[in-house]
Length: 371
Image (cartoon, rainbow, N blue to C red; front, side, top):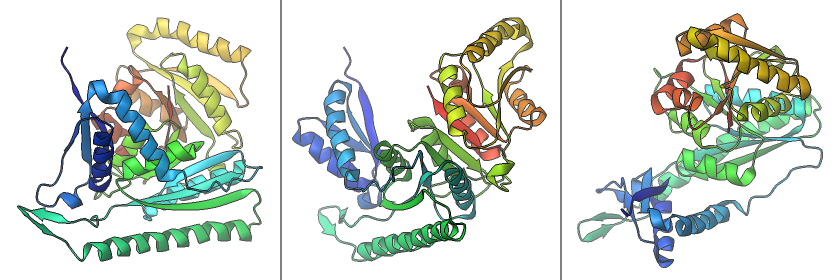
């Protein structure tokens, strides 16, 4: 049988070297890919490749490393809290919009909001040239400057939220702030695994804008890989307060996971005065069979009532994307929700190009669950 090569993880150069050393100490052969051959120390997105046969052993080592990265973080969660919201930020205006949405949300439900910033800098390691070894004395200074800048901005952001809490005399809401160095996708996902938030709230910006380290295509990566619901807030979304969000749409593909997702959705928006409208985008040739399936969904929630007003409809359109837009416009949808699957909707919503299309061109926030 062919021994396939698979990618275990994509990390910064520094962490990739650490993981490689620990894997080899445990007898797991591996090699690194996508290293800057001239300046290896400044590489980001370095892949750690292993044999497929070594996957289970490698994951044991890798999971131990990820756990040690975050097991020292305190959990300042008070007993009255019912929700934890993780908000990755890059201190831009559009990530501030995500902070505002998350803060208003956590105030409604009572709980904890954790602001998270990940910055990438050249690593304080030597840069090899042929047989010589040259150390860049400026690297430590650059890294320290960026760390201090991130911590300074994070402190200001945290104080702003704490000021709102104090001025409005809000109770049972806690604000935390975390700053990490590394590749944004890895750091956000790794911290999420440790922190176990109720939801991740992120901003995203238009495709015509200059890409940044955190907000943009990274949002698509988090949506696809996170194990908790993710709310993506488009830059063009006009936010005027949580009380203005009245209608949440859910796209169904008539899978069993829809039952669980709709129930979770009702719990997540429990403290917000919203209605949930469940729809399936159907081609004209499948309308009859999809009506039967929709009736099954209606019957299920007639017998298993949720704590929100719930309605159902078929949206008939041969073009999937036009159907979604029609559903959003005709039903005045403020947040569009769906569940990712290995097939069906996931194949249309979360491949590389389509995910970016949804994130970059939509003016409607997306709330994504995972089957």
